[in-house]
Length: 501
Image (cartoon, rainbow, N blue to C red; front, side, top):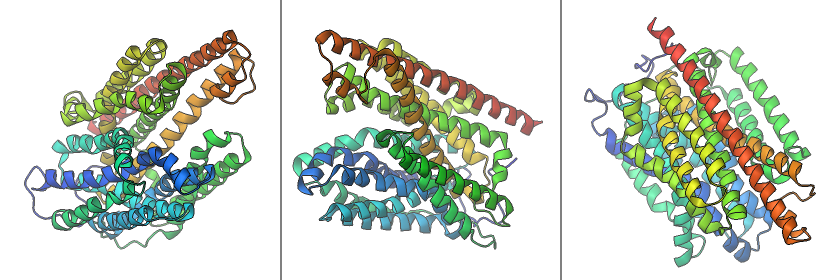
C-alpha cells in the first residue's frame, strides 16, 4: 500500500511549517487562477460560434474542429504531461504550460482564418494539459494530510466554476468586443501566473535515474487521442459510423499495446501495479461515475429545458447554473472536507454519490412539467458532487506514491474525460432507444420529428415520447451512479480495513 510520505527520490521542498508550505494558500490561489483559465476555454467558445461562422466564413466542420482541437489535444497529452512534470519538475512544467497557453491564446485571438484558429486551439491544448496535471501535483506537494482534502476540494471547485462562468464571460466579452477578445483576455492571467509561480511555487521532481519512457509516451498519446476523438464525435456522426468505430478500435488497440509495454519495460511511465490497489481502483470507479452522471445529465438537461420546457439556449444554460454554483458554495465552505474527516473517504463518497443519484431521479420524476422540480434536482446533484468529487481525487492521489503525483493527476483528468464520454454515449443511447420505441419516426432528432408531424396531436405525441425518453435515461443514470458509488465506497472501505490490519 502506498502512502503520501516523502520518497527519498523526491526533491525535498524547502523547510515548511508542520501544516505544509508556509505560503500554501497563496500558491493554491495562483494555481487555481491558472486552472480556471484553462477550464473556461472548454466552454467560452460556445457563445462565439455565430460570430466565427459569420466573420471567418467558417463551415460547420471548421467550427467543430475549433471546438474539439483544444479538448482533443489536451486529453491525449494528460498522462504524458503528468509524467514530464514528475521527471523534469512540476514548477518548470507549470511555467511552461502557462507560457504555451499564453502564446496559443495570442495566436488564437489574432487568427485570420479557420485553419489558423484550429492550430492555435491545438497549441492551447498542449498548454492546458501541462497546467491541468501540474496544478493538482503541486497541491499534493505543498499540503499535508490534514489540509490536503480541503485544498483538493477548492481545486476541484474551479472545474464547476469554469463550467458555469465560461458562457457568461464569453457573452459579456462579445457584447463589448470582437470575438478575438475571448482569447486575448488569457494573456494578462498567464503573465500574472508566470510571475507568481516563479516567485512562490517550490520546485519538486522525481530524481530517479530511470530512463524516460518515450515509447509509453507516444503510445499513450496516440491511444488516448484516438479514443477521445471517438467519444467527442460519436454523438455527431453516430456511434456505429465507420469514422467513430475505426477511431475507437485503433485507440483501444494502441492502449492495449501501451499496457503491454508498461508491464514489460523497466521504467514504466504508468505503473500498472497501481490497479492492484483496491483503494486506487475504488477511487477510479467513483471518479468515472461522477463524471458519467454529471456530464450525461447535463447533456440531457439542455435538451429537456429547450425541447420540453421551451427555453431559449441562453436561458437554458443559465438554468443549469445552480448545479455548478452549489458545488462552488459547498466547497468554499469546506463542507466536503469536513465530511471526509468525520465519516472517512468511503462514507463521504457513498453519501455524495447517493445525492447525485437522488438529484438525477428528482429531475426525471419532478422536472417534466416545470423548472421548480428540476431546480431541486440540480441543487441535490450539486451537493453530491461537492461531497464526493474531492474525496475521490484525494483517494486517487493518496494511492499513488508522491514521486508520481503528476501521473496521478493525469490519471484523474483522463478518467474525467472517459466518464464524460460514457455519460453522453450511454444516456444518449437510452434516450434515443426509448424515443424510437414510442413513436415510429425516421428523424434523428426531436426538431426534425416535429417538423415532419402532420397535426398538432401528432406533435404532442412526439413531444411526450421524447419527454418519456428523457425520464427513462435520467433514471438509468441515477441507478448507475448509485450502484457505482456504493461499489467504489465498498472497495475503499475494504482497502482501509486491509491497510489497518
